[in-house]
Length: 219
Image (cartoon, rainbow, N blue to C red):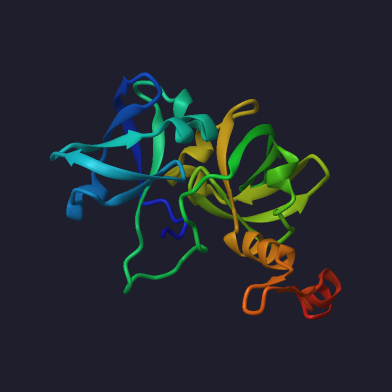
């Protein structure tokens, strides 16, 4: 599990393509201080497993499904990536619950400056957009951010100069592709609301939790 607080920017050193998979070699520094084989590292928000490492970087396998569902398939030698190690039990929970399982990709539709802030308007598929709520959390390329606005076709976030300087989001421009992971809470709520079967007695029973109930109770 991750928190969406990027620890450093890494660089793609090489990409070994297989028939339907790939091995990424990534140069890094800070995250190597306590790295081990089998560790989970979020690379642009995608949870990958360390299969080898040395003093200057690490390698990770990327499956066919991951290449299809994320922007990792568009990386090339020299590409910059956001890196975050899995959180530790005694660490600060600075962002929100991030699994590293990308729900889909988005396209940056517009980048605008607002004094010291930078606004990003991002379009995405309805299947991803339906879980995005104003003032809720969204993970963009592994960065935990607060949603500032949502429309029928896109959503917006605003970042401070620090976030722009320590992540690759500050390098992004209109037309660039980003990985998106929704807040997992919304997906669990939807799943629970859709379950009408009482597995204890095999009798169908409609859930007493409704959309109206959640709204009345501040959700």
